[in-house]
Length: 121
Image (tube, helix red, strand yellow):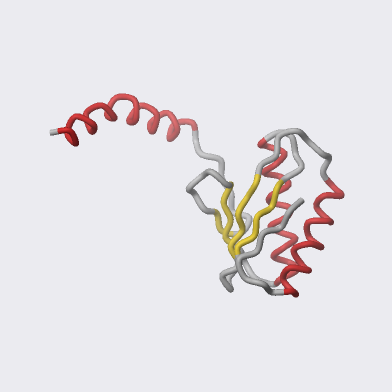
């Protein structure tokens, strides 16, 4: 497991490593790994790779890691799944509703061509 740091802070780095070890003890190794980007208040950005095999189990591991990290540091964090644009604050995570996903898909499917035609003119 690699840890990438944009700014060096030994005390935070030590706490992050301890939190990782605690969470890794609880979850089994897996083939698919989800990675998250964590932003701290002081500007540090950390990357954490989950050990879970499914997205549902990975989210459970992520929320456990975030909660452990917040208890260890005493501050709240902002995080997102790598490859996604939506950020989450602390352990407040809600799965997107099916109706919203269908609405977005229909908008992209039916209105994408019209937008391309307008840009070409």
